[in-house]
Image 1 (cartoon, rainbow, N blue to C red):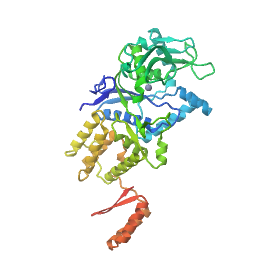
Image 2: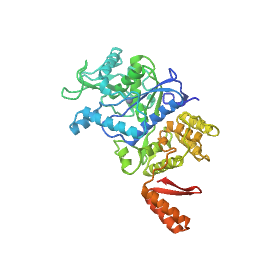
Image 3: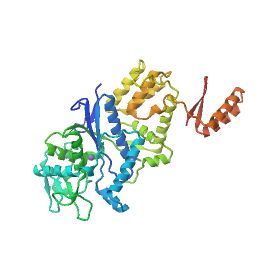
Image 4: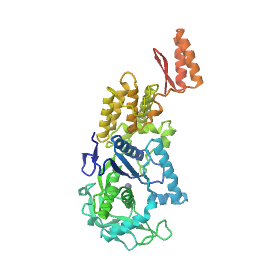
Length: 454
Ligand SMILES: [Zn+2]
């Protein structure tokens, strides 16, 4: 089977061909760890995970590198506000980030490099850019990348739509989406500020240089896939390309793959708009993190997804229904059990959808078709588990597992059965309502009542 991905470099869906098959190197821009991560960012992290799992299902061996940005202006500012060191702050929020991604069943990266552990490498990298005449030092000790010296500048984001402001510089990591300016590789700081010694005096690395250095450190000068949220295309990834290709003289990345935003009331979910929710917020309202994962599967990663509490509710319900459907199914004989016809064609269709630029809504639709296919068999169970290796919904925890029911509920159920046998349907209905209050729906089957968790 061939795998296809939309490559931002060509703005086309292309067949994916890795440099050294079956090995695939992916670098994903990780979190800036100064606060809890919001659902908008988590959508991107779930997307990275789906990409990685789909590659694995296509028999590629993935090396997945995702950095931790633990040095940045926002981190310094927040640490000062809290009167703690930046290390204390970033350690705490790295822990929370890893907890959140765990709860979303996102696989742990093979390498999770921290920016602060690569400062020496960044300094050497900047020195080489200076030697090659692609960067210059200002009087204050800051070092800038000269975008006019890098001829391919703008190839990812389309420079024609932006004004090239030659001779102007920007020290901040975040800047106008319309102007292209020389950007800081090294930011000079005062002697009492947080920073590192360098040949240019005390300072801190710019955000963009962190990712060029760490990605090439672990994946080589040229690697297969670089991914991130769509807002990283410019300036972050554009600047990463300029630094990396300027440094090595070779192509940096073959496929750039970007995930769309999560919206709230039609606006991008973001810290700056203060319209964001975290996993804690949804858990407080009684939703599971995996319901959010399921919700993200209902939209294509290149489409915007509007977050509403109603849509999360529907996702939670859909997930619960799947779980209840597969309870009591026959377990596969072995984990490697191969699907037989007619089930095998469902797996084929599922993998085709996932492999065509990660069309997860279609893949999920195929799974639902399979769930509806008459009687459960071991082959059907095995296929659901295979599909879940991509979807990551932890369905193995439900498949073939009987529902654990408390003694109270079991007692009520027995009384209700007696009432039904005595044709006392009024009493039986009353008990149905009582059982429902305890969180279970009764399905009366010819073989007896079956409970479903609500
Ligand atoms: Zn990055």
